[in-house]
Amino acid sequence: MWRSFKSPWRGVWGLDKAIDRRSRRPRSTGVTMVIDTGLGAQATEDLLDVIGGHVDHWKFGFGTSALTPAHVLERKIEALNSCDILTYPGGTMLEASIVQEHCRVYMSRAKALGFKAVEISEGTINLADGRRQRVIDCALNADLVAITEVGRKDPNNQQSPTEMAEQALEDLEGGASWVIIEGRESGASVGIYDDEGGIRQDLLDEITGIAGDKLDWLIWEAPQKPQQAELIKKIGVNVNLGNIDVNDCLALEALRSGLRFETFAPIAQISVQTGQWDPAKVEDGDNGSEEAADDEDVVDAHA
Image (cartoon, rainbow, N blue to C red; front, side):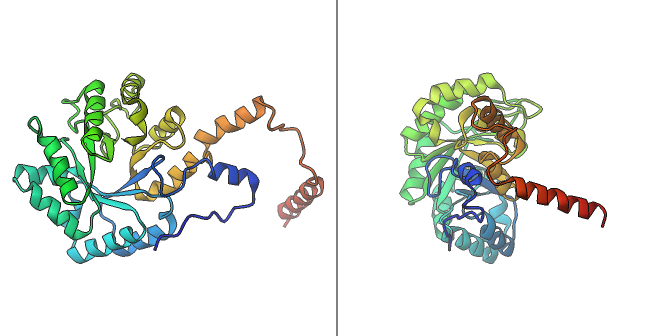
């Protein structure tokens, strides 16, 4: 059962302030979506003990849920649902079902398996006019949360940022709860990323500009740390981020909280510039402790 997150460092004011930069679960902004490409049931349960308070969405990447033993998948979904984490299979699964004309069967099975949502994408296939909305409706009729994705997986067949942004707005209007901006697992050559994984500022600006007040419902796939750091700097600490490796969840949370170099350095610099912190000032009552620490260092050095 999920318990609200409580830091063991509570009471150290500076760390309290850092941790409190983040919105708390359940939340509508600052969502973290992790991608699971094949964890076992025990590994999932162990991870949830550590990261359960920081994860909002758990995506079973591409077709992995179809290749996981049924008893393992059942146990994983049960553990995730008990933590109130939104679970869904990857969009390629649904695309494959649509090609086989089994969309409604897919929705029914997803619901029966315990998934709370489905991802609706056109990363590989193209849907006829009006079909995307019908798929969203099909998910909603099955009592599933509809999460759509915009963008293509083929680097040579990319949508324009205007097309992605307008499709996102249309999906939200049509009943989708979230829209994922394609980034793949590599974070390169698709969506807003160039061939080296760098963010193309012109594409990011165009999408965010068109999205306007719907920006909080966009989830940016950002598997690489530099991408995560840049999106946090440009959009804010509570930007929605996806395709985060399950083992990198705490590292991302530290990045969001300003407890890693990439996001702490600007905070420290601003603190000096605004006079909030004077590097030369010794805290009240710290002289003795600093001297004691120096003495201990001397003892250690000669041990």
